[in-house]
Length: 425
Ligand code: URA
Image (cartoon, rainbow, N blue to C red; front, side, top):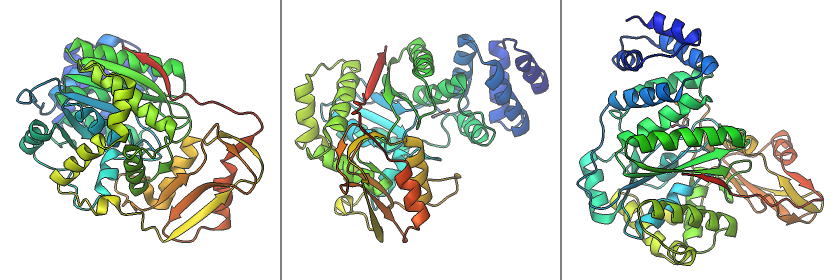
């Protein structure tokens, strides 16, 4: 077989066979097919798409390109969750300990943030000492013993996705459904959990800009998971504004703690409870919303979170430390009304420029920077009332403050944003 023939076949809109896809992925992972040919292939897929069968073959070929984790030594239904990316998305920090606090094991491998989106690993690494690189044996042992671990994905897992994602990122081929579905599901399948909750974000700050596309991606990923015997459910969630109060690594850890102390915003607290209920149900555990909320806000989830942080070397005093960002700039409303929009993409990029995110993979983060919003879409504001505080390492110029202010939309009509748009099972 020759890569050029497979690229041409896809370019001309034909369907590739299982053997052809396996050949391409395996030879790419081994360094035989070069990056330039794989980039051309990704672009051909971008324009011509893939059938469901091809996407499944691509997913399984990627799974086979690296190690697979065997979690069978851990008793019970092992659970995992994945978000397709968001701004201010600290859900894992709450959801993982919440589910584990009910005795359901959570074995989770997380990723780093890129561009306007944040990553759970970066948030956890803002806690002094927290080790995201524990060995696979220690990961399994920890989940056996305390029911929870969140680590970084090993380099040996789904090698082809690591290589292909890096290419897609620089060749404008990220936002295409078959490539996202195979990328996400290959990682989830290789990571070994029995049940998987997929948080498919939609809106300005997400890869999926329309609900129709989010539904297509969800359906495909749920079917891929089920085909290989994993209980899989997708939840389409709103990413038109940042999630919760904060954007930025340290600030988001602190918000996650506030939520677990019963001091979070009600909308985000309820959202986490809804996801918790779905994740527990998927693992065969039926709990009422009241029981779940009780676990989330009155110490059970926080105790589990602290146990995980401590076990992975994190400093429990540093965990509660406020942001040490040098400068805090308050932003005030200029008129009365309601917040009608806080575009997630714009604020994600704004926080990235403060140092909270990476423009390119090699960028160093400033964990302390970010934004805390006092007001979110649907909230009423009075002229002169504080809307947000920007945490930065240096003074902000007038231009930067104006850029921030212009993205806060205030109108006369109240809008009620919905967090969960649809569940696909
Ligand atoms: N998240 C992933 O893991 N892969 C993608 O392709 C997009 C989002």
